[in-house]
Amino acid sequence: MTTPRLPSRRAALSAGFASLAAVSLPTESSAVPTKAPGETRVVYFGGDYAHNGIAQERYLRETFSASGWRIFFAQASRFITPQLLAGTDLLMMTRTGTTDVLGYSPEGLVDVRPEPDPLLPPPVLDALIDNIRNRGMGFLALHCTAGNPQFPKLMELIGVRPAKSGAIIQPVRHHDFDPDHPITRGFTEFEVKDDENLKKEIVDPAVTILFKSTGVQDGLTNPGGWCVERGKGRIVVLLAGHSASAWSHPRYRELHWRAAHWAMHREIPEFGMRK
Image 1 (cartoon, one colour):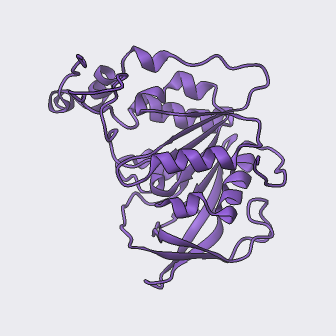
Image 2 (spheres, one colour):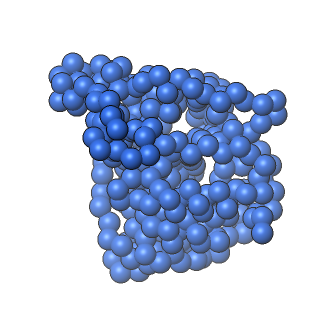
């Protein structure tokens, strides 16, 4: 079995980040499924060494099982293209770093792994921002997505200072929910076990803090979720989600449900999953 090699990352980086994007995006990246009339298209991009992409996909599919939306799960960053984003109603992302963790291969068995693709090449990041601001695409920036100092334009978009902070795994309490916002109205305190209590510095006064989070072990209280409107688009940031404990928690699932509808300017129906 022969897996084609891509140019080495060192050689590509010597030509600049834009050149890396150019050499690392093969023809598969241009294949965008046709969007049916009336279709709500949701794209999820997540999963890496530190975050269980299998659990993320399983629980998100369950969470949105009654939505009627068509949900795609990206196998690699090369499939998040300007063409795909142009027809996407909601992008959900749980990724950090500058490249995919593994080089993508269409083969079932891989003996030589290709070099990984860049995570957000400049044309893709620019298209993401443009689709939010000018077309009204919704964006859910989940967990580690808010910790990408390598992408200052992304950090500015979601309203935080581009800095990275670590956290211990511990039970995390979510509390002080905004009683007036449709995403959090009626929510009361709940706890997620085995998660991170991430600290992010919000620097944009346009941001609305939805709730706070406190680590049971470290005792630190931080913003746990917030939202902001950018042009025609809406963005929601939810920081929990390091482990499957958050993705499977019924109350956190409802936050995902409400946030997704709000980000797409939709009425928020009562949360429920198919049995």
